[in-house]
Image (cartoon, rainbow, N blue to C red; front, side, top):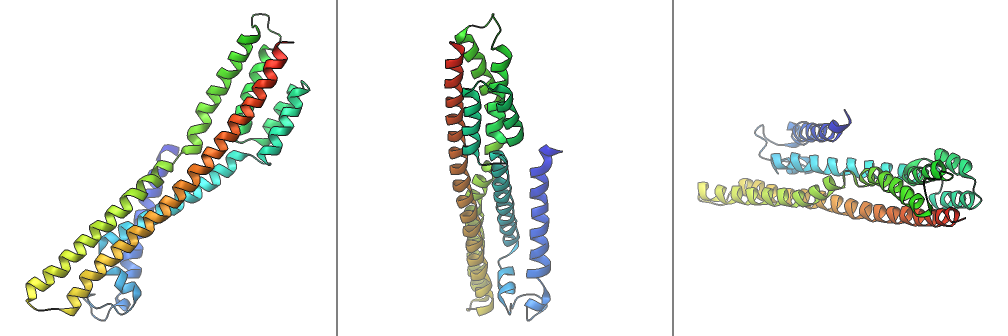
Length: 257
């Protein structure tokens, strides 16, 4: 079920967006005529942007939903308490050789940092007094456990960022497509009538401008969210690497005693 969550979110966003486009923006009360050619307010004007407006609204919804999801997920990955304080506490316990308390702190903290440190501490505790493992082999085993844990945690931190990146790219393109279609409609109206039809010309220009605005808005939301969360993930991964370095240094010292 989890692997279909993103697909479900996208489908629901499309349904909500086109429902909003048809029932709210396309409400007859927003137009002076039954054919919906003469909008009388902003909602009607946006509706004249055409079906691509509905698609752009769905992209804005998707970008917003996944931005919120990333914010909640990254905060959850930090664990229950301040990660800096947690790392200091665990490091102090390890320096004292109190493996059990360090593991208990990891279980209490949870999150990505705690999971990685727990894997390292648990593995070192298992092989600490094993005569088959020398000093270098112990550290190699700990590093292997760390790498395995990181391979599980890092994708979770970067999950769905590609969706934000994709929306940032295609929103502008779809907006440009709407702009082109709107201008084609405007010039076609001029060609068909042979005279300047203010109504038809305004519909074409509205379609062009509202699609441009929608594409830019979706792109801005996605780009800001992508850059923000990419920076957050990079900082968080750096914090994990620093914690791993501190813990590994302690294990190197302990293994040589």
